[in-house]
Image (cartoon, rainbow over all chains, first blue to last red; front, side):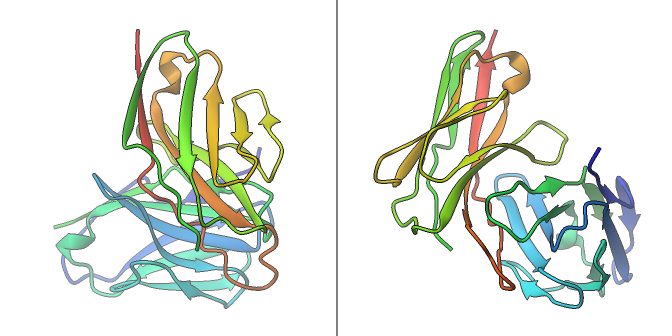
Length: 113
Length: 114
């Protein structure tokens, strides 16, 4: 069974903390993605990566950074968490071909207090 | 990235067919049409995709207009478990080594009435 695994289902962090959200895929996919999802706004792309050490900004990269040191792992970093980063975060992976599907993790609900 | 337009919400009755439309008038010749759905409290899941011809799988059918500027996802016999947000997305045939943002819109919230 193919899998995209996010390290935490629920997370509570304090304002100003550095937060790491981890995502691992076991399908040898080139592409990996981080989204956030908020009510009424749908899924918004934060960052994506099409290869190890490569990254591209999505639609809302401000306040976030990413790291892809190994093909199977894509980390989202909140350098200094703020309350407006409270959200559901979703990771996905796909092969580097448009005629194949993407796979999503179950999501991490992050609350910044 | 080419954009898609979908209705915000649709309602249907259980055990009836559902036709979910998507407009993509700026689609390029190298874009595949993908559909995903997101059930409550879950990550999105793949439903179906196609390029030019109509496609069928165990979950749904995809009807693509001849000019490819629109498509319709067809659920042949909706059940309560099909209540979800459905997303229509365009993806390039071959991203090569470059960017493939996999951008989602707001999708269509499908409501199924018992």
